[in-house]
Image 1 (cartoon, rainbow, N blue to C red):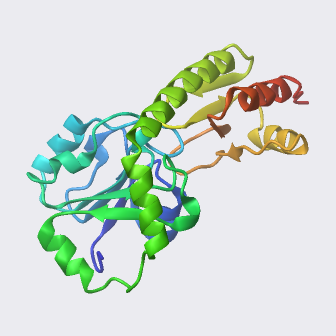
Image 2: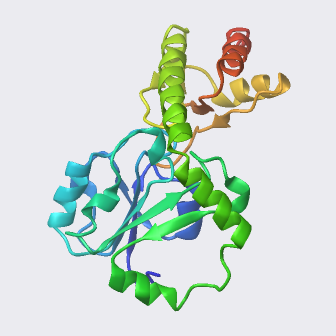
Length: 245
């Protein structure tokens, strides 16, 4: 969609963007002074894997300073309860937003999502789209999920409460520093090799993501999912038994 356009990734960003744009420049998501004044800027809100969310005011200020395209990935936004960047589209047609039903609505196998942009941009892209992207059954499942607002509200409240509980417990552990998050995961810095921790937990049939070396981040760290209470308790119990030599 952006052939021949210089691309900048605001780090940290979802790993698939690094694969899609292997030659991209990089900037700091939290420092707009490093953001480009030319080409395409790609960023995520909330950020993956940290869960930090760029404010709409900050994004709006940047959009007012440039007419170059900006692509915002909001795959985890529903977990934050915050407003979408879609609210800025009317004033900033250079903005494009990626939305997904894979995360909050738990429909990964259906590959349902949306690319939201200005009407002229969407018309231009439509001719390059593959036909039959969404089958009828997937479409019905997506509509049912979106229309179940009560389930969405319960999910949001559950994640908020369990995330706070898990953050508090992790904060009390030695050598562990969780980072405040707006998503359904927590980025946790560790004072010991994250690889060793991950291997130990895997032996207990608990899978976490080693984020050591993630572009834009430094030090050893892991990302853990906010799950049901009994699962979170199982994680903490096993983590507490970990001994790093």
